[in-house]
Length: 80
Image (cartoon, rainbow, N blue to C red):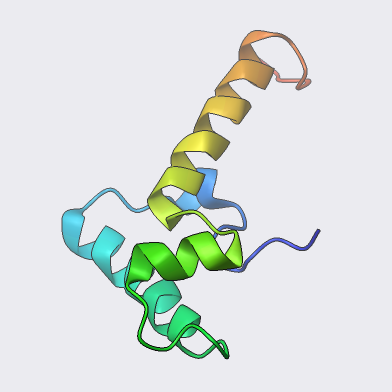
């Protein structure tokens, strides 16, 4: 499955300011309106119909997975 450009490498560039988070989310909010059959639906309903999650939630999940992998030695990190 291809990664969305808005999620790709999000553990590196993840926005933390409220304005930045809202700006990034607004891209997905706008794009989900363009999908046929989603017009007139609320944002959360569009996400559910399209099988998507909010970008902030996806970033949190990605951060947790990366942290787990680091803590369990799944990455070859040079700790020096």
